[in-house]
Picture 1: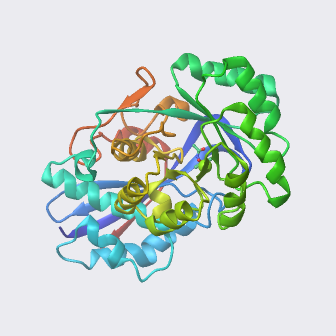
Picture 2: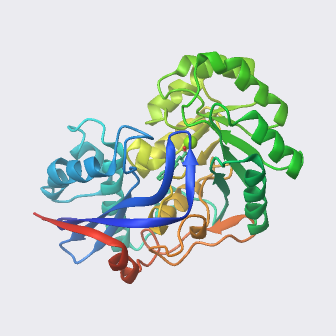
Length: 369
Ligand code: NPQ
Ligand code: MG
């Protein structure tokens, strides 16, 4: 494959409701799409999930757009016989930039699979045609409002519920949700690195609520604190922000910092490293689940393909399109019995609604060879 041009599209996608976490309130997504055009007339799409500000990780969307235009795209456009598997090696000279690299790798992979007629799920080794999904519920002003919000998602059919927590909003809301929906509700929490060593004893009290897992309470590089909490808790510890590669995931598991892994392809530089992480976790008897970054239907299609792999044994943060967007960039993904169907068509297996793209477009930049 040879790329003739790459477009960087910026879109402003309002969220249906504000999403509050320990690192801030999001009311819209500043989406960056990478569109790869090939010499055979092929087109592939990739979505960059970096936030508008570097509050979840060190990357942010403006920076990702610059790195793509200045470094990453030129590195792959010069390549004849380009394949998705070569993108990480061709861009390895540029340190980090995982979310930017992942978006480019996915655009190349989509174009490659469109050409070969293979679905992303088949390419990655998926074994399921529908996957269990969950919902991530933001911090609310009151505990009553949280219980009401969770009730709404339960009515929509969500099986697993994840609550965002932060210091001052943890034990009480978790107790209220457990009280309201009973002992059998699959429930987990996510601290998004908001806690510190002084909170160890407090966090260990989450053990009384029969949670599936406690996700990333401490800083991304605080492996030792996660090891200590895991020692004090019966509730499994899961890592998110920390897990930036298969090797880092193996070390985190083997040091006891986590016994469950949240896999986000974008956080690891792409779906190929995400698959390698899946395989390493499987070899270490460590269950994984697919994390979410409020992707549009493009990134959501790719996450569904990834979540169809055998060791994704826990429901992922792959919610229905309507959880975040009134109008998605693809036909909307909907919930059926707590599950979502895995696209089967070539590549991402979705049709891009170019009318919606044009409506929410804020800028377009074309990079030619
Ligand atoms: C997490 N995702 O698991 C992240 C946090 C998160 C579904 O909770 C815009 C883009 C807003 C990405 C807010 C979920 C976001 C975002 C929160 C990711 O830690
Ligand atoms: Mg998380």
